[in-house]
Amino acid sequence: MWCFSQPQTVVCQNGVIACWHPEKSFPYEHSKSIDLEEEEKQACSGSVLSRETEQIAELHGSLSLTGPPNSMLREIFYTGKHEWKTR
Image 1 (cartoon, rainbow, N blue to C red):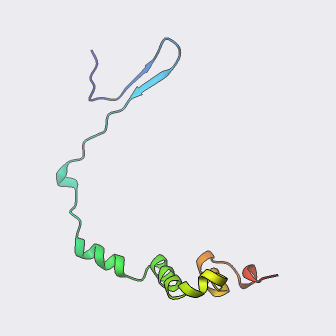
Image 2: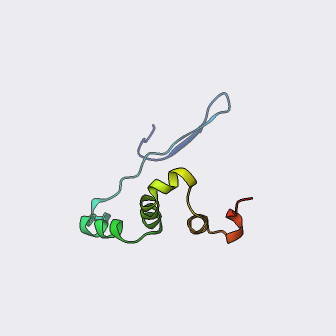
Image 3: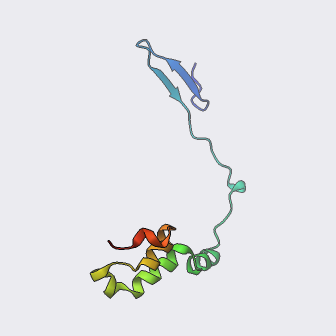
């Protein structure tokens, strides 16, 4: 008899291997609640992505015509200054 709460592996007549692996339950007492105030603090903190987004927002008008300056490209892609020189 099959026990569907346990993982099972079978080989079908045509050679196909079929596996059943039910999701294990995660006990509630092992979970941790999310502190929304802490999440907001982390979202507002100066992460690299948020700083880059702020820089792009500040330069929005000029970026549409010329693109980001070389200094910003170096910071975003972690490259040397010679990578972004125009030819």
